[in-house]
Image (cartoon, rainbow over all chains, first blue to last red; front, side, top):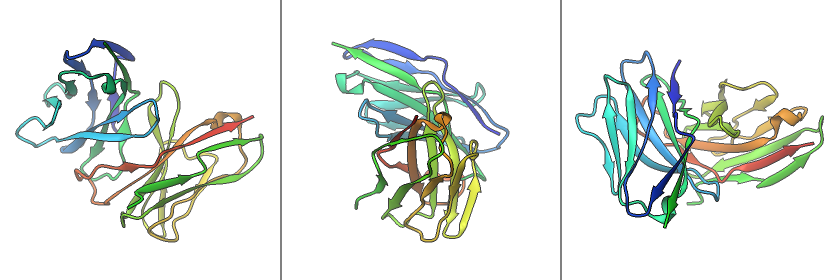
Length: 114
Length: 115
């Protein structure tokens, strides 16, 4: 079984600053994938970034980067140069090697202040 | 490509009523799944399917049925609605290779209220 923990229910960040969203996970799978999704107030789920457990480098996608620390079982999302449009809920999710299913954390709400 | 579509967008049911939430995708994805989203609990998997004719239970399957007769469609049936099933329901699809990097594509969601 997999467990995803997001300990920050809500965060405030000033526009143009960076923010780090915490995600820790627990799994017995030898390899796995980690995903981050964004859910704005309109409700849709938007895929942001993926990190494979055997990837040599941390994933980056534009202003999103993943601080992956395998030994600590953490996969924190960093949003650089925050914009007002980044205000949303963010979910960390995980899929094991032999699994089709995604397990989600409870989410973190980010509010960007002008 | 319409992606993943869900109908209806909103629904109000009385306790004991049944209904079907529709989900369709036009990306030829083998894997489809249903989640419910409740405040503070993230998304929880209800049922999933890895291809036509194949379905399995997720984390919270009680009170829900699914079937997959075609690759495109994956309806979710509420057999006898209960207030505890008040939630936002998401359908998602992806290519089915287990453990892959393929992300899941989500539908816009259905907001269901059971009174």
